[in-house]
Image (cartoon, rainbow, N blue to C red):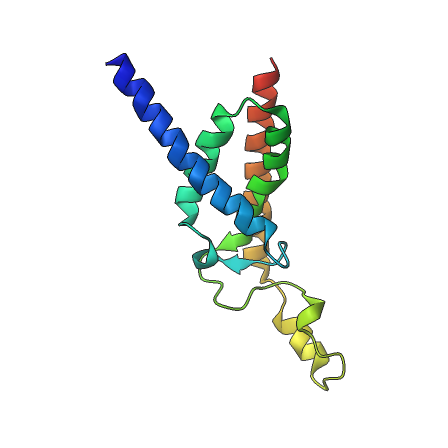
Length: 139
């Protein structure tokens, strides 16, 4: 019975590692990570990434990796349902500075206040979870 549980845990960690690494690679290749993107753009469903990263981080014993996850994991908050194909937030590279509608174009990129609050709260929750988990490993 214990051997089966150990094997199940190893299998779960292998799957979690695959999903967590895919997410980390995805974040590393994101052009503007602090824009708010639609969660459908993630390499796996957001809840699956959340669960996989939490399992992986909980099992991780490497201090450097834990430190890296401290800034990678909370970025998951910048992926929200219903955003659509165009990311929200100020991205100067998408603006035509000579456009007569520059002000309107910039305003169209703004993150709605309720969505901004959701992202900020989720970011803080994920950041706190990583910090708490990393601190508990130091004891």
